[in-house]
Image 1: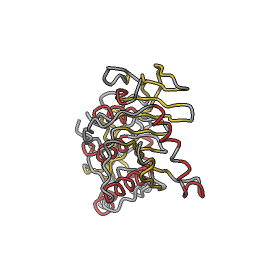
Image 2: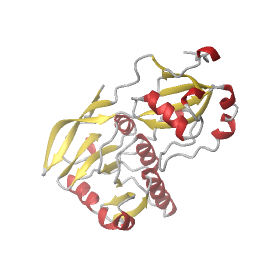
Image 3: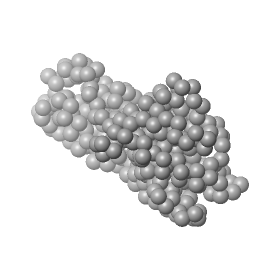
Image 4: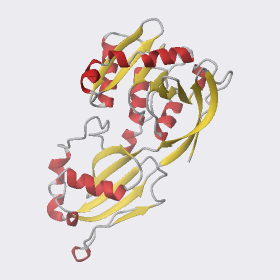
Length: 299
């Protein structure tokens, strides 16, 4: 799986997937649906996310989370938009290399461009709330999440009450309709803390800081998210120690796998009439009496 630079005479842009043609971009998840007071089984398609390492002339420049498709376009577009190259002709070769934990977009640049990579690498300006900017290895991007304690059992009504409590407290979003929120709820206190930010990862980091500064234990509460659930959001919630995530949008397949490993109950697609449980439904009253996690992700 070594990469070779093209000779100057043969220099041209091409990308060649190695191993399998990346990964399936969509998976089917079997989950528990709580709707109108009744639990039922059902299937939902959820997107895959995987660490994408962008390397130039043998050195990693950045690791981003993304969908495993159209990766040649992503590698070229990232290189152009970041100013790493000025034209596609400056990329001599591009290989898409599938690794155990992610995919490497391995590029070799023209010699005059390669000389500038070292100084550019430390000045990367990532997109707002990308969550992974600055990481330089795939293994760091998919590091195992902490395993959370069992915590308490929640009723469907408690989850619905917690979700409904978020919107009225989103002061910045009321004014702008342009920010995410992360909140923490307990049965005894309601919304304990809520933080907003244009970046969903930033909002959750702010919430973690608020809980830590106030020495709030998280084992008996719910982390509430107004965004989709990506793997970084699960990792951050596990670090907080909360046993349950409730989010208004769907999770990615990698987030589901990470939540299951961290023993976090992941409830998503939370609406006024119900929600869907993807992992560890045993924490929700009536979901799967006497059984462990029942979710399945099918490749």
